[in-house]
Image (tube, rainbow, N blue to C red):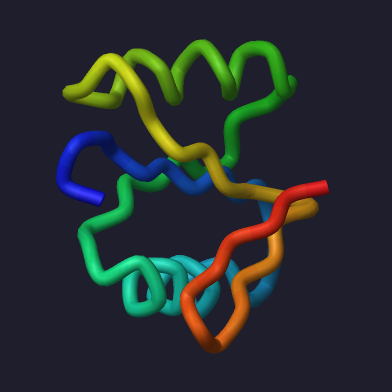
Length: 74
């Protein structure tokens, strides 16, 4: 995971803080977070702006984390 950043999108989920902590724990790295951004196109653009690498893993609604550390997004 050191070759690229990870970014998590959240909006108003009541458990967003816990989900963010879990994503960081499962991935074993710091995960940047965008919270409360209206509009998916805007959120995607802002995610690209907050990263420090050319490639990044984007997680949000529809992504599942397994206990083994796998990530699957619908």
